[in-house]
Length: 319
Image (cartoon, rainbow, N blue to C red; front, side):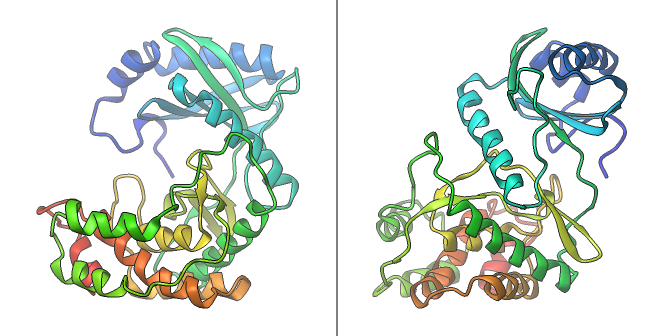
C-alpha cells in the first residue's frame, strides 16, 4: 500500500515541490478542496476525505472517500496525451463491460467517462474510478504468477475484439529488421553473450501469422492486484498500444517483477510460470514460440540500465 499523505510514485524529488510546480496546488489540503468541489459539481459525488495522493511525472492519483465509497481520481496535465487518455478510458469501459477485472470509470453527470477541468496551473484531463482492493502481484507466488499469465491471455482475447480508432499504429512492423539494426548500430554491449544469442536466433525467424492488436504494454507487478493468489485487478491501461500478442507477453516476462522504485529483473521461475499460465488459456503457435525467445532476449537487453547494474539485469539476460 502506498503511504498516506502526499508522495512521489517513483521520482526522487520533494512531493510538495512537484505538486506546486506541476499542478499549481500549495498543499494536499488545497488539492482536497479542489477535488471535493470538482467531484460534487461534475460527478455528483460528495467527498468526505482525501487521505492519499501520489505524483508520477505529469500525472497524479488521488484517493477519496465519500458517498459512493472509496474512489480513485486520476488526472494528467500532459495536453499532448489527452486524446490517448480519452481512448484508454473508453477502453476501460469496454473491458469492464466484457468482464475483465478493471476499474470501470464512474460517469460524470453529463455521461462522459473523462472530463477536462481547469486546475490552478492549467487544464487537467480527469477520470474517476472505483478503488480495486488487492495486493500487488508477488512474483515469488507461483500460483499468483500463473493466474497473471492466464489473466493476460484473457485480456488479449478481449482486446482482440475491440477496434479503437485512436489507437497508435503498430510499431511491430519490420520487427526483424529493427532488431538487426539495433544489434548493428545501437547495442551498447552490456551483455555480449546475450547479444550473441539474440543474433544467432534471428536467421530463419518465421513470419508471425497473427495480426497486431491492442495490448496492455505495461503488464507487471505494479499494475496487477491479487487476492488469495488470484488476479482480481488489472491497472493502468494508459500505455495500451498495437503489437503482436507474443511481444506483449515477452515484455511482461522481463518486467513482471518491477514496482515503482523496486526495479528488479524477473526470475526464470516466474517467467516460466507466467508463460504456463498464459498458455493454459491461449497456447502459443509455433512461430510465436520462436519469437517469444527472441523478444524476451531483446527486451532483456533493453532493460539493462548501464554499467552500474546492482539489480543484476545483465545477469538475468544471460541466465
